[in-house]
Each structure stands twice: as structure tokens, then as C-alpha cells.
Length: 312
Image (cartoon, rainbow, N blue to C red; front, side, top):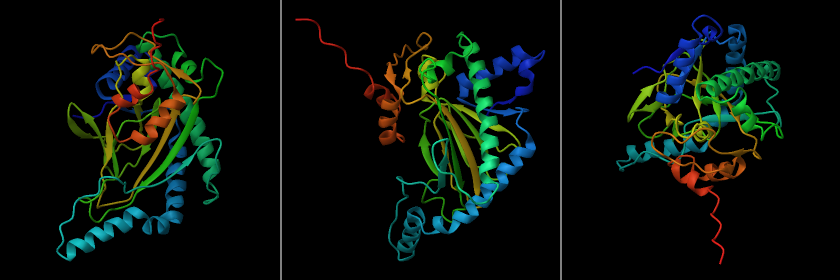
């Protein structure tokens, strides 16, 4: 099985219908697809790779003294003493930081802020074009998902970026790169490493590589798209494996609802008849923060508003 690769430039041409069908298939069958010819200049992507790699080099010593490294070292030492050891299942072999409009960004390298500001502007536009395609495929009015995410225009949707590195791991059998999870938000756009793999998506009970592809942007749908689509588009479980043979770079941008936005199904429930609740996204995030690596169905149940008692 291969994660779908879609030529996004054909969305506005003679092959529009076919391209829309490919996007629908990616959302419905996979929850993941890759976009090529997406309109983001390759020169900008090269600059993003450069500044993020340089940023990690400045942070690398910090990772080397981090809890995952100390924990893995302790396991290896115990093994060398002849003790039985078990893989760690509650932490990730990952160095991360977040950037969004309201927090402080790294100042080094000097080009980081300008490059990432330009990149995020391009990614945000691409996310909104993808959302409009999803609107159309679901039979919704253009801009419906964006409107829902903004609380019908009253709030600003959240757009954040997670810059991750998964350094080479001497014992990938003892720790995870990033534990399996679904994403909480809306549309996620990932600029992943084109040399070092490790990202996998769960498809039909089988873990499948999201193959590295130079210049591509990986798109996946989060829990909020599942709810808005009434279960027609499922958020997909995915994970990152630790690798022995390289330092994996990963830059994920999340186009999410505003915390104040109310989310509920915008189309009829999916074929399984699942009923999704109506809730405030900030409340969902409070639950997600505690249950990220657990099944998503209890998260939906946890934010379901209690039914009012019948009148006496």
C-alpha cells in the first residue's frame, strides 16, 4: 500500500474532477495524502530545511541530556548488567518546539524568523485551499470548515507549527520516536524529511510508511474533520519510529479551530451511524491533553454535553 500522491496543480485545470476524487479518496480511505506541485516555492522549502536543521544543531546538546536519552542509557546499562529490560512506552525520542503568532520564536539562526514567517503564510493559504476542496467533496458551502473553525467569523482559527527532530537512536527496540495517536485539530500539513523515513499511518490494521518524497507536503485530517464530516473522513492513527541511520526532520503545521469555536457534525453521520457531540473545541483540547495516546472515542464522549433532566 502506498499513501496517495496528488498533483495539486491540476485542481484548477481540465483534470479538476479527477483531482477532487483523489483528495476525497485520501481523506476517506487513508486520512493521509501527499501533495506535489502545491504552489509553495521549492527554494523556500530548502530555506526552511536549512534554518530548522541549524536550529536543531543549536539545541542538540540539550537533547543529549534530556529524559529520553537518560532513560535509554539506563536501560542499556541495566541490560549490560544482565538485567531484564522492557521497552519504554510512555515517552518519545523527539526534540520539539512550537511556533505560533503568540509565542517567542528562536532568534538563531538569524534567518529563522523571516523564513518561518514566510513559510507559515504559504502553508496557511494551502491549508485553506485544501479545506475548500474538502468542503466541496462533503457537499458543504465553500468556506464552511473555515467558518466553523472561526466560530462563524467571531474568532481567529489557531495556526501553529511544531518543529521536530528525531535524532538517530542507538536502540530503537527500546523506545518510540513518537507514540501512535490521532491529531486533535483540523487540517495538518507536514513538511517531512525527504531522506530519513519513520512516519507510519495505520491503514486497514497495517502500519504503512508515509514515503519520503522531495518537495511534497503531507496532509492529514484531524479529529475535528472527522466530527464535521459525521465520520465520513476519519482521523488516522500515525506514529514515528526511531531510526538508527539518521536525524529525521519534521515540520508540522496545524490549522485548528479557535478554542472558543463550537464544533458539531456538518453533514449526516457516517455509514457506521456514529453520533458525534456538539462541543467547544477548547474543552476537547483539555481532554486531548490528557488522553492523546489513547482511543479517541472516549474523548468525544467526555465532551458530550449532559442531557437535561426531564421536567418533573
